[in-house]
Image 1: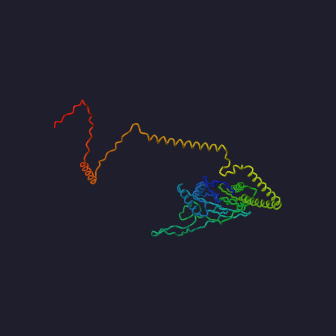
Image 2 (image 1 turned 120 degrees about the vertical axis):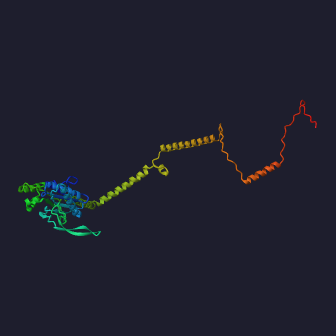
Image 3 (image 1 turned 90 degrees about the horizontal axis):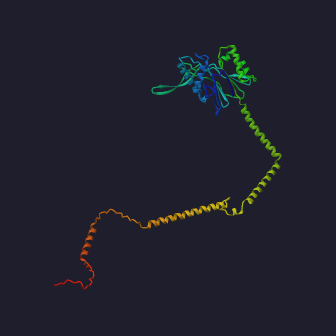
Length: 401
């Protein structure tokens, strides 16, 4: 889609200041808007920018489902800003094109003309707004909330100060977009200066580019009224590249299939023989590789992994020997530790255990007393005296009794 806007202070890409063009590539949604603020009490371009800025805050991706809410919120925002601007009148008329999945709808509030040209025929998409619309309002009665439909007048422009008016646009029918369809959104001053037939003739001129068509319309309008402000937006649906790509892809697939069929029909037998010969050659190569390159001694031992050599075996033996030596060293250290424990220590230590009183039970006391009696009754052996050695020189004592 190619778009050109002359005097485009109100059309900037999304993300920039004053955006009125919204594009969603995943669902192929595009919103294009033109704002006319020439009837405001301050600069028309400022009023148009005020509208587009508000529209950027309000509009969602699904404009067809939420257009009424978007316009109402936008109207309230502009009214609030006009109060902050000292009560100056902000009168903005707008024309909007909303594209979604190869379909388009036109919205207009005020007398902003929107045209579509197809097959050298021009058609007016904008129209007069409905004078009255029914809106739903909540009413509280005796602690109950009721929803009633109330008839209200439509606002002639965005920013209308009356409380009992709503911003309800005129909505065109849903139109299927075709290749090279041309859409025009103009300010009312353009159609006042240039008639519709002249506009259609300029738009239908294929020798002119979009910018040249817009400039020619601008020149004709300024010749009639040089002091007026004009806004011209021209949008051309250019899906021919996508359609051509799709057609070319299918055409290429069809041609390729036809070529394959022709080749198979003409050269079918030779190709089949060549394929069979190639398969046989591959079989011979595989069998030769299997029986020539693999060593019998390696294949004979199923537990020997392929690719094993003598160096790896030596490394494994060395590792096993080291492990065996480490195990023997560990056992030797354990034996030494046991021997050290069994040897007597040169400096014995005495550990004194705390004594606890031995309290005898009555049975033990009776048994001890019986043992004492028995020990007293039993005769005690006399102690043996050492033998007396006879010596002549020793005089024994005399017992006179």
